[in-house]
Image (tube, rainbow, N blue to C red):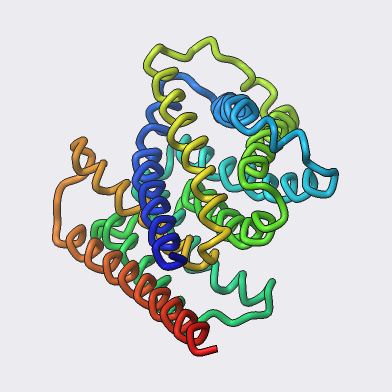
Length: 305
């Protein structure tokens, strides 16, 4: 039963990677249709908080002050990660492909963050899977053409580090707070966080005057699928799946981002894309294979006692 539950969560995490892969495109299009970075993030997380507040009201009403603090801690990293990522996507000197690459590099950072924070060295297989996932993103997103290192790339790299830390912290907080309530807290505190950061650094961006109907459509897709659904899945899944494994699965967003770019004519097919697919498949198979072996070994030990 435990094995089936883990597999279910890994499949759900992969579905989130698909949604987030498309999210690189939809976020870019939403910004092109008139949203500022500040308003995009405030509305994205604010609308998500409202939906989650209704769905998980009973669970939220029972929160303690300490649990609210856990939610705030997790949200800080979420705010930083998305602020850097959205700013990178809105930057004129960086490509979506490079941003996808550096965002995916967060998967390489997770085992090291776990090592530093939890004082527990991950297995060699996790490191190998992380490297394979990074190589996959490298092949798929750079497509064999190494561009210059721009301001947008630096923002995306900072975003990756924040998301990497978010995986690790969420692994801890998801065991302290109800899953639905924790997802709500992340969205609510993220909304407040983006508003504060916006007031400090870009007060002139608090406007919706230039947003088109298409922009609102992309916002709806990002709220419902890319935020509400995705973060409910991630929060619930990480109670069963370790941050290292979750990060490997979610790093497939770079792969799917490139596939969607190919489908919409933004890039052309090459053998680099094929190689990237093979690397990611190997990372997923390696990760899942190790998990199943550990699960079987645990079950065997339990049966013999």
